[in-house]
Image 1 (tube, one colour):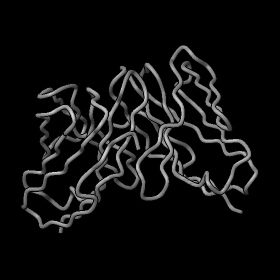
Image 2 (cartoon, rainbow over the protein chains, first blue to last red):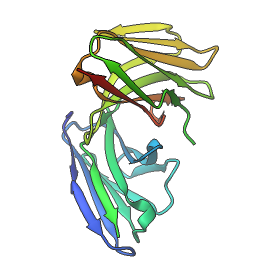
Image 3 (tube, each protein chain N blue to C red):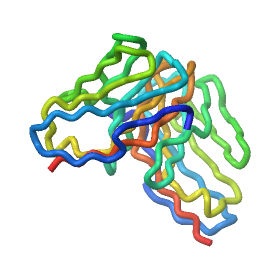
Image 4 (cartoon, one colour):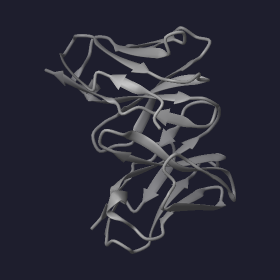
Length: 111
Length: 110
């Protein structure tokens, strides 16, 4: 799986609580991405990073923040989780100009 | 907003038959990619076709790209039960951001 891990793999949390998801790569690639996947929508880009401390918004960034203090880790934070953020979250890396490699996903349920 | 849209949304075929799915997009692209997702797993890259290419093959996969019609197709020949999955097209307007469609769910019956 291209050396990408996500943690936790499953999480149930209550509305209004903060949640942080972690993506870790062993490959030392510059580009990392966070997507969410919902039925009928495919994958939608939340945020991405093009280097340490360099991040930018995707199409569904409202309610999410990210941080990248080390090349290998890209964190996604939901400051105050809402039920609309119940989803499956995927991290991806891109080694070069071309394909992306995906982690196994984190299933998040906000009750 | 999503760039690519796959058609059909779902496809059921007999083992050994060919499966064809299509992707249409709206704006100009740098490349177009196809991914497979097995149930409960992450996406796996299948094939990338650049805007100056018209056809590409990889094993039992054949991808075509028609930039004048803003469309692509993915053909899986001689399908197997292991091909049961969801298939997504993704368009890249530059080299580092992808926009995914909603996917085609393929079921291969034994």
